Image 1: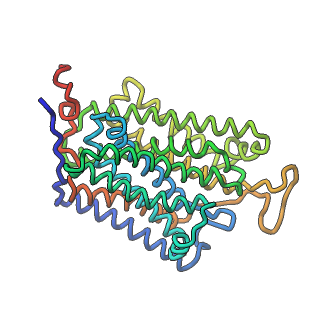
Image 2: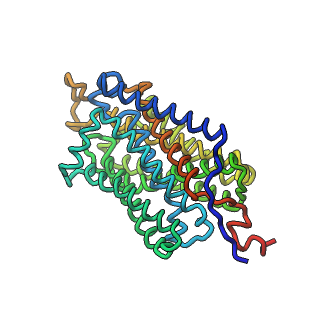
Image 3: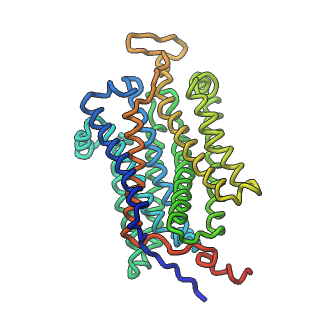
Length: 405
């Protein structure tokens, strides 16, 4: 007998749902207020300086932008690679991708200080700049994924869903490549400019996006009492473990290749050995929390089958990912550019010294408001669109489940 997946909007008129929206709005309003405060008083009220020009909001923004690409991975697996068990998750995967990108771009635009200056970037193009290319990649991502979602949800258009899925898959790889290339092409900082940044960002997007997706799935199905079977959950957690291992691999390769180049020894020593908070965030946050512990928890025979351990692993991947982005963005700016190799440089512009940075409360609130915006969009979409399957039990997602008994 053929299994039919039924999609249905959330029946969410209760106080819990309204309370969730209320709390999310509190964070969103706090973020908007923080943006106004920073714009009104200038970036002097933040931890940013002329040396650290990308602060905490950029950490949140870049994390959400690359996580948006990774969140679409589930839909891509169902359409591009024809894995039918992932198909019930494709709609929510697309919605989450759109929501995360919207949240990330909101933080990015509000952190500019003069959001109106975005008009200049959108009307005067410099195609030698990766930032100009990213404007097209980010705005195009919304259009591509919305069309892809329409193909999946409109029965008459279902036959085009795979073609749209393949196009969306290629587009999101380009989007993450563009984001990683910001740091891969930038030569104005000693820690940037390695070509491996683009593939490393693609791998990180798989891991971050899937971790957020699994958390969303666990929370939603528990809150709505909808069945969520072990088969699809264990499949997703195994995938997350593989992606976390791939991220660890790229981290190792990146730093080993940097150590091969003599002119990068200084910045590598700063990140790996004597960079203070950046060294701690790298080893404890990015490596231990973001990769090693999740891999151990997800693949251990005992914890790998525990819902709590899977949830903990997802949180570790997210927190480790934020630490990894913090080290790349802030740590990369904190270490001074080696303008004249072999010489000691000093000036009234703080050349040659490690630049201090401490994130301010408005910066953190602005970043959190971006995440709250993403969750708010997903919550509204679930309430009014049939994107969530009524059941993800083993029998519902796997036609061979009954036969295997």
